Image (cartoon, rainbow, N blue to C red; front, side, top):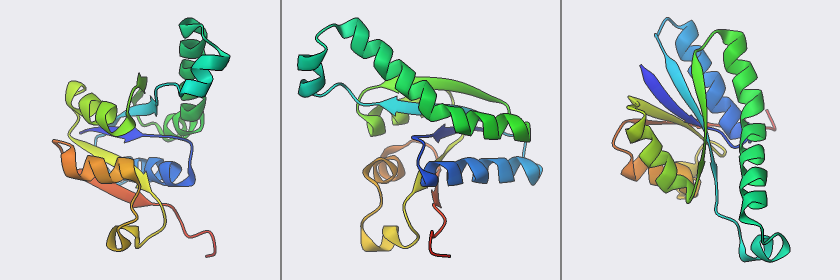
Length: 146
């Protein structure tokens, strides 16, 4: 099975990585498309650094940096993966990436447990739940107070 695994470096995203590793350890033949979505530059960034190539390099570097810890975790667990940094509105580009990469599902991190019921699930996770053409598994970050 091939899963899209969006990562932004947050504890919730790393919980999703651990979930994917758990699937592999449970015996599922899994490959991962490890992805980071970089939003378009804000006006302030464009004014400070009007060179589009400079902004692109900075965005690409930030994306690969956000994937580093997750990639190390997957590699250490023997989960095959590819890394992709996409640019644009995160929910849209991640949904499109799941389709273009022929993913069987998406594993996405979200905030604390109970956020779905309270209507405060992250906007990217919420959009993927409603608009992805494949099943979406939402993994919650561990409770920091526990």
